[in-house]
Amino acid sequence: MSILPQLAFLLILGVAGYILSKRIKFLRRNILLGKGETRNDQPERRWQTMLLVAFGQQKMFARLTPAFLHLLIYVGFLVINLEVLEFILDGILGTHRLFAPVLGGAYTVAINIFEFLAVAVLISCVAFLIRRNVMKVERFTKPEMKGWPALDANLILVIEIILMFAILTMNATDQILAARGDEHYLALGTLFFSSMLQPLFEGFSNGALVAIERFAWWFHIVGILAFAVYVTYSKHLHIFLAFPNTWYSNLKPKGEMQNMPEVTNEVNMMLGIQGETSSEPPAEIGRFGAKDINDLTWVNVMNAYSCTECGRCTSECPANLTGKKLSPRKIMMDVRDRAEEVGKSIDSGGPGLEDGKSLLGDYITKEEINACTSCNACVEACPVNIDPLSIILQLRRYVAMEESGTPAQWNAMFQNMETSFSPWKFSPSDRFNWADKVKEEEMK
Image (cartoon, rainbow, N blue to C red; front, side):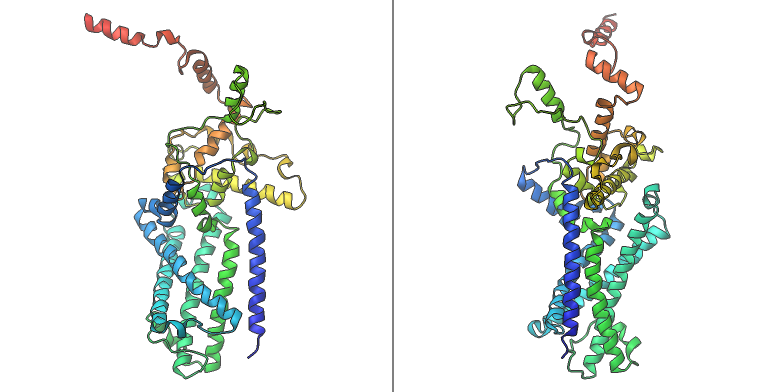
């Protein structure tokens, strides 16, 4: 038997592995362009969050119909990919259905389960295509979803449909050849779903069936490898990043805003108090807030790469619902796009972060961040615990503290809070005058 197919498979596997490893290193470096942040506290709670939110799809079920369809695809992805192990071993060893003799009747049961899930994935993908392109669900038609984001989503759905058809076609032709006595193929018994396709191929010769079966096999495994590479360029990277992203979730109460270490250090220096981690003052004063991705934390950048672009955050955002320009989904997409731009510039020997651009201004406008009400609706809605509000607050802090560029009415409020400890311009000693007035009225 020729070893050329094995050599071809090893070559394809090696090329896919090389491209995938380079892309993973690129993504890791881009994520680490953000500032350091330690989130290793409460490990038990973090594991629980990851299991419930990422693995258990807990937050998806806020919307039942898409959650059920997504669950079918998710389970299909996890279970069907167990068969990929057999595909890879068959490709390397030059065997066919390596596990069938070992598992016996259980193998037929397993293949039937795989086929059921393949059909479930196929139906779910068709339903999602209809939701996006026929029903035109509003959150999929926002301005940031024009062009590549919309094409990317449709491409993945179409690719998954074709890959599922390849599995069913391979099994159907495989079993016809086995029934005709071809020694290379094993009779597995009844395969419920692929048996429905067998009448389409009954009139073909053995040679034609072998060609179709082999094409389907190669198409499926090469498609899986290509899909694995493509995912790293797609919003579907959340398939993998959802797990670390939920593990590193912000576990603080939703309404708690993190103090700025730079401000704390400045206050401590003015008061003559040494910082907790250093006995010497920093040589350079840190930037207040964030202007570019290197001012954000690596968790913020990982959030951006984990974004599913589902739009649940934007559909819950009160600013967006009332016609404001803010879209939390766009904020995350902009952070990811800026990280990609900087990473590619660094790899090509370009200026990187010193390219004259910045996240604030060139990607995200002041109008967008000023529209945010800090209500946390976007954080609560995200199915993988992404935190757009953290990024918005850091950008807004930069505008306020570095540029003094906030709206005039905001500046008046800030000044009142600094001098009078309230948003209103009156002395703190007069704060409870209203109570005295009420008491006087009651005594009359």
